[in-house]
Image 1: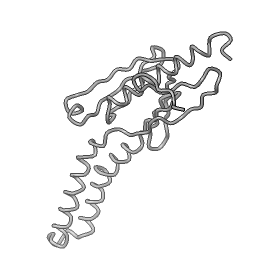
Image 2: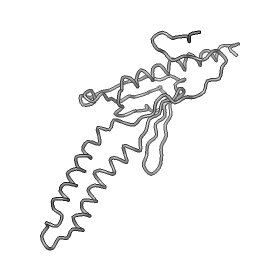
Image 3: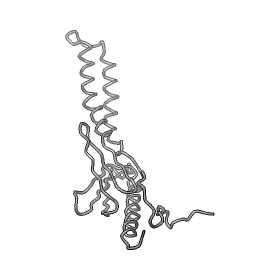
Image 4: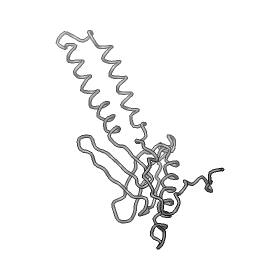
Amino acid sequence: MTQPVTLGGRPMMPPPGAPVEELLVARFRGHARRLLWSALVFIAVCGATAYFYDGLPEPYENWMLLSAAAVVLLLLVAVPFLVWLSRSYTITTRRVIVRDGLGSRRRRELSHTRGYSIAVRRGPLQRLWGAGTITLSNGIDAPLRLQNIPSVNLVHETLADQVEVNQILAHREAQPGSL
């Protein structure tokens, strides 16, 4: 026996009355191209530290060079990496979740069932890298922005499919005698 296939590769929907569990569709972070400058600073600081080590004039000591290199690496390499690492996006079969924050975590959610509009904005550099910014707005809450999303077209299609399926399921459950 073969499995039923949907048109256009849409996700399969459960039969009427069956419980729908929440499944993970995608989990990702913003595009890592923002870390390019941090990587270049890391390489330059390591090279400069190795070049000037034991070659400074007498009043300066090697610990001063190493401490200055550590401060530059902390501020221009570690902090941007931690900021990038602290923001994550999760798409499930029921909602979109945005988590961010270094010290305290902030979490925002948007349900697919309520429906929302999807706006994609791509600058010239984002087009070059295949990234973009997605804004989700349901007209009630503040818009939810997913910034510098890699493979933005794929994420856009996935979100549109999830909204469609969830609204069909919500409409089906709202009908009398659906259970």
